[in-house]
Image 1: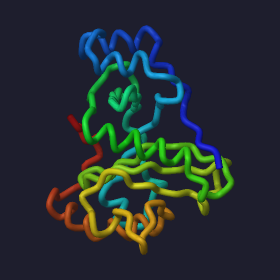
Image 2: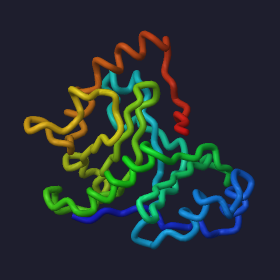
Image 3: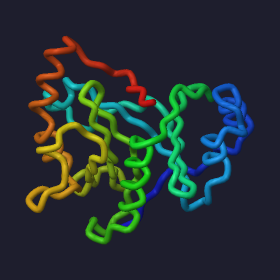
Image 4: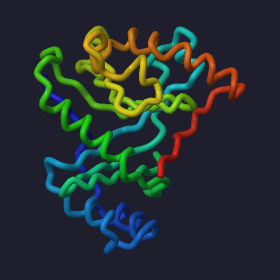
Length: 202
């Protein structure tokens, strides 16, 4: 098993300018992003799945790219920023529990030896409106969907998606969607429509 993420390119001038426009480059959070060791920094595509996609039959194939996430950790302090897709503009800065959970889950995946012996691309999967954040391990080459996996790391669905002896933390996509379907149905009724925009976490 191998995990692939896009090449870290946050050192490019346009991203430094975006960070400078958001917080000072001397801010401790900025320093984590600028000085983290290569093994402790990741660039991920964020893809968002609508509630109606969960409730219906569209599945993960309907997930749409919504942002880029840069995440880094230094001395136990994890920080992430999200940038709009088509412009180097930071829209969100994440730290604290949300960033720690995301970083620790990805680090644990790198050490996992139970996944199929294929190459996975890692996508940050967000269920808009359902407050579920996961890593989608997308198999390569394309078309090998049968071995894809979903790993939730931030979710209010404690009784459904949290690890127990009977329920592993690594899910087949179909099982994952079944597990969150009832919550997605409830949320869809509450909101009255899909929420496609990325959810901001501060």
